[in-house]
Amino acid sequence: MKFVCIGHATYDTTLALSTFPTENKKIRINNKIECGGGPASNAAYLLAKWGMDTTFIGVVGNDYYGTNIIKEFNEVGVNTEYIEKSKETETDSSYIIANLENGSRTIITSKNSTIDELVEPVEIKNADVILVDGEHYKTALKVINDNPNAISILDAGRVNENTIELGKIVTYLVCSKDFAEDFTKQKIDYNNMESLITIYEILKMYFKTNIIITLEAKGSFTKIDQYEIIPSIKVKAVDSTGAGDIYHGAFTYFIANNYSLKDSIRLASITGALSVTKIGSRYAIPELNEVIKDNYNDEVI
Image (tube, rainbow, N blue to C red; front, side, top):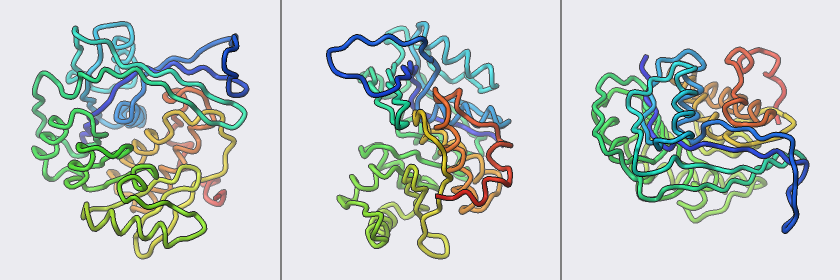
């Protein structure tokens, strides 16, 4: 199978702190962690690491960060021939404060607002599986339309025109809690299943495709035979950076490899949960055998 991931590429610098910093103080740390990032970018890295024939389409700058992103991809076997190396702009970069006390992360991203599309058109007509994150909309739309029989997945993190339009044509709309709430103008109440059902039905009515709502540590919500929250596993979180991207990459792997929808969601949740136990998104991607081994089956939240 041929996997194609289209979207945002950034370079992450993670600063791990014992607690969140106090304003107007100097703080010294022993080290920092640097690696590539971005939703579709991290998903592509996971898929290649797990042995899939994977191509990434996106834009980086002609700089140190862009060179390192491509180098990381090459190390796990991602096809990088469609990565555009722009001489006009710098690679997007993110600076992450990982609070080791509670596992939260605060992200400040420097994003070039002028890059909304690749300069060169991309022709791919042999894709079996396509994952998009809303970036490079015209390219994503073209690749999906050129491969009508491919499984397509949208990582919908933010509500904007591009994600809304792509959501109408993909096989699976896998959206964040924030996307679900912002789009529907409804709030999720974990003590009231009806709130989730209402949001799900609004999304289903509008997008008319398979809907999955990710709920971070709570798991995921969807309807298979019935409405249900499919739980994750209990872990001690130290850095949640990239966990959602890793979830989407894992879901793409499992659904493409003929796992059931419920098993694909369950295993994607386990993958994301395991990733938060380590620092740095790509360094935190677990091996495939760590995810599927039996001793995780009963450790539900």
